[in-house]
Amino acid sequence: MSLRTSAKRKRILRKAQRTETPGAVGLNLVPMIDIFTSLLIFLLLSSTAVQQIRTPKSLTLPLAATVQPPNDTGVLTVSTDGVTWQGTLVMSLEDAQATPGNILEPLKAQLMLSPLVAMQGAETAAGTQTRGEVNILADKAIPYALLKKIMATCGDAQFARISLSVNRRSINAVGSAGLGATP
Image (cartoon, rainbow, N blue to C red; front, side, top):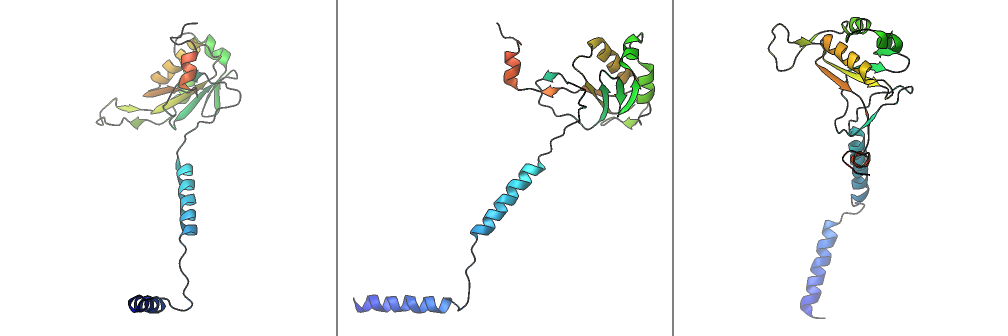
């Protein structure tokens, strides 16, 4: 070995001995990165806000291709047992179907108990207050004529937005369900 190489080696060894302190432990970042990655994945998965309205087991909602999630609003349930508003039975299905006209008075009386709220984006003038939104959960076996009466009653009770809940199905199922498809 040359004299120059050995001097360089000695210098490197002296420098390494100066920087290392006895008893010092190096910090291992791999476990800490693993824990933070696990926390990040957990928080991302748990923070996705999925709104689901609890559907009674006695209801079978119709299927539709929709991308808009349901809003957290008042729930009007129409099943074979009857018409319920926020879990309170308002009238039987037979009474609702037998009622002449488009307005169901017992249902309207119950809906009118909801407070009025100002419409968003409107100035506070007369007639700009509504009862907000209502979400109708109806069994798929309920006739359309009855749903039409219920929606007309909600409109007459000053609900600005009326939604009908459905079960979501994939877009591929819509195409194969006969919408524009030939047999």
